[in-house]
Length: 296
Image 1 (tube, rainbow, N blue to C red):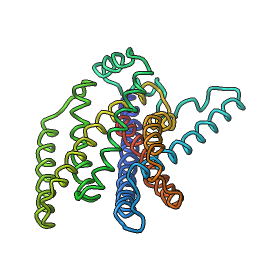
Image 2: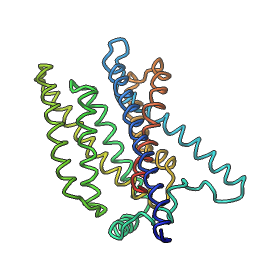
Image 3: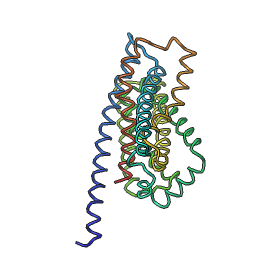
Image 4: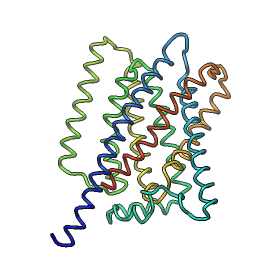
């Protein structure tokens, strides 16, 4: 075995490790997100709680920001104490590591997006986050429900993410992708419509729920592309979680200030727990998935 083969073997092992780690993170993301959706629907539709979606999402967002802010503060405090730049970015998101997995076409695309300035990137991330999450929870509150909303949103979102990366970052799409996209679309459509017929639902609000779910999937695709740009530009995961939710928290906070009847002190604690486990952790996990698949 020559030196090139010797170098290739550790690289392949690391690639497999990154892929397995990403797949495990995705499984945890799906489990936690599904649990959050079921619990959210319970709090929305159970008569004794009747939580408003805007209030629940506000609590989730604030919970995530508090945890992310604490982590960023601890990391910076440790860096100042050590007198070094260690901890400025996540270990796998340094520009040098990012450059090793970025193709020439994507590098040009990332430079194009970076020329717009970090400020515009954060604004775009906040706008798409606001649209995605607000649409997602509005869909849960319709007759569509948590289960079908998750199937439609999570079924369509990967396809839209791949298409968004193709148009915005220049990522290649193989023939296998189009075959998988067709099968996935047909499967989601068959499952959704069969469930609708079985439930005997003909309410126009069901279709409104589908519209909300598709809107959430499209906005999610756009913010995941923005994730890639920021991660490959060396921004830490916790920093992304902290700053991407500013628009969501401010907008929902303003809405609740005008509609104080939706603010429920009695639900703060249970929704905060749901937010930490079913909202904050999935946000970090999906970033790990994206980065792990890139490195693999």
